Picture 1 (tube, helix red, strand yellow):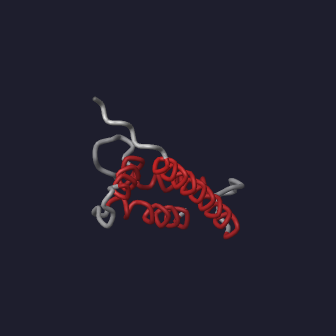
Picture 2 (cartoon, rainbow, N blue to C red; picture 1 turned 90 degrees about the horizontal axis):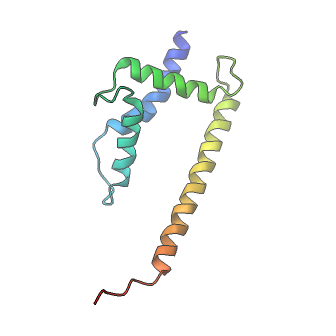
Picture 3 (cartoon, rainbow, N blue to C red; picture 1 turned 135 degrees about the vertical axis):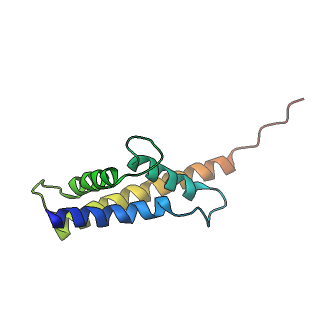
Length: 114
């Protein structure tokens, strides 16, 4: 049980720390929006704070997500498959955002109102 809690805490820490970190580095604010979203996901009761219970619950949910066969443990293969899947989803999202941005650039500017 300790191993599960430690692994959950480690997985969650990798997600919570950026959410709690100070914004910076992106002038468009998108990174800050991501951090805010991560914090909001973990603040289950929406009180503006992440309690230990919320922190651990989110970690347990992430652990279940990684444990593909539901046997109560995560193998290297399960972890790799999960992260490969997430990487693929992120790459697809990046392509979608890039295509949208290019389409916006290619669209003619609206004519000024008279």
